Image (tube, rainbow, N blue to C red; front, top):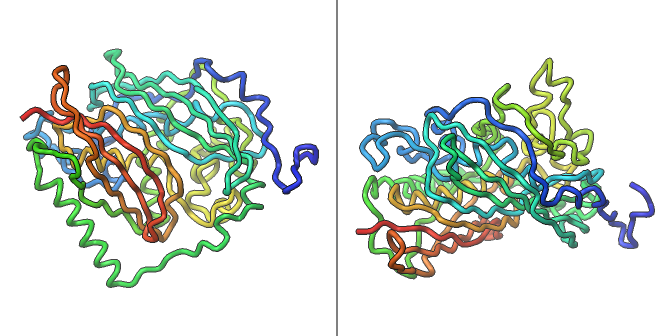
Length: 392
């Protein structure tokens, strides 16, 4: 880095000179070639560790509200080729990497189902630069992705926050230098499995029924996920449709794949013409740090870590599992504060903080406060969601 950009505290300032020209400009990107099929939805439920039979068992689904396997609301992000973060990674910042800072969703009503073709409209919304304990000068940029089905209906809009920073600064800060992977006894693991089964039973018991008689102060059942492993992170990654070789095509103009990534974290487009692993992100490219420790440490992480888009999915699935197939998330706004690391547990808790009744609404609207923590009670994510509940 240029000494002219180095501060007295040793941190290097971000060069954001190429970012401003992308704000408000319609963007291209990747687009899936094929329509959604049932196995895409099944693989999604499997990768997100969500054993709700509504999303993988056609016999069970046929007896429910939709009469067939229909995608959960979280599935929208599976149909994008950058976790919805592409619009928020525009403009070259040399030496940069990025992690997810949060997602805001607006859902309009239609749901994705087998046979749908999905298109997106994208735009960088805004950005700001501030100092953080993780990487010093850090950009928080927000980008919008609108998801449209082949009937021309807007299914939802995602406003994703990308945290862009210099890997060099993150290594100097060493925020995770003392973070050691947690180990678990056989008894602890057995107890965790019991907790998981209790959570799964909570939405099995609701079945196809409506979630009625919801009141302020109601607590949602705790959802445990983990302990996280390189295997679980890899399974998550491979459930995203964009990771399938040859599944998508580029269109229009976008700069997110050439945004100043370190050489070790860049895709090799020419090499990918012979071996697609050179361009798939996990073996080579920006996502390799999630499952390869040497590259995790290169960008300031201590070891393998999870995906921000998956954290958001865990939360959306948590809410819809509780509400059942007759509820509908209208709006969700979640901030991500700490990663899921290998060896860690993730716990999601929710509480109904408000019930709103309106003559124009189909049913009452519940506000759900969400808190995601690890085994040490460190906050990983938090936010609120508005959920349309059914009429009796």
